[in-house]
Length: 306
Image (cartoon, rainbow, N blue to C red; front, side, top):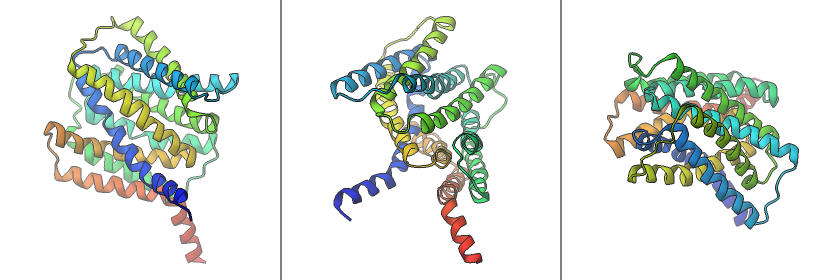
């Protein structure tokens, strides 16, 4: 095996961990910007910045743009995976949805992906895979338990609906990414997705907001972080992982996001980290291991039984 192959294997082995760590930092941006920026207005500007940069990069490096039909799929994928997903999450948190409840709702995403991917992508999942998903959901519940409050004013039919729409949207967007954009140059495809998502949040901001943003240090840092680390870094890794694996397996990584977020909050904001959360982190890690190795484990079990 040559050095290039070894590097490729090393990258692919490390990519899931790097993705989870980067994705978990998204709460930094939402937490810093929330007091000073309306959510959809903030996202509209963020998406516009990313779309412009990716478009210039695509033209500058002579990237191959997809055909008309694929371009439409890219725009529609962006509507779900960017506009409706992030728009719903930011909007719900801005209007008081507790972080623990939000995390618990979005933890349903791997289960939804597994159900829909079975029909849309013909991805078969055995009992080990489903067992891992159930264990992962339980682990997330343990991690967010200290913040799992249901008596706050921010839990309203509107914010709960926004979170469920967001969770369903990222599920649909992930499946569309795998089915229609798996062999497309990611630079123009991602630019189109941010344009599609940007249209959604821009219309939402026009209808319900006044584009009130106080451009202080926190907001500028949050915007820079979310553009560079989340939009370019974490999202690119997610799409690369989806290209190289089953979307139902990749989605299990989202079980680890609340755990890593809790650790970051402990380090950066001095939030408490309890024993029950540590146990939940271990449970989430075990769940992801079971899901990502479920097919191999099931095959080995069949061989052993024979």
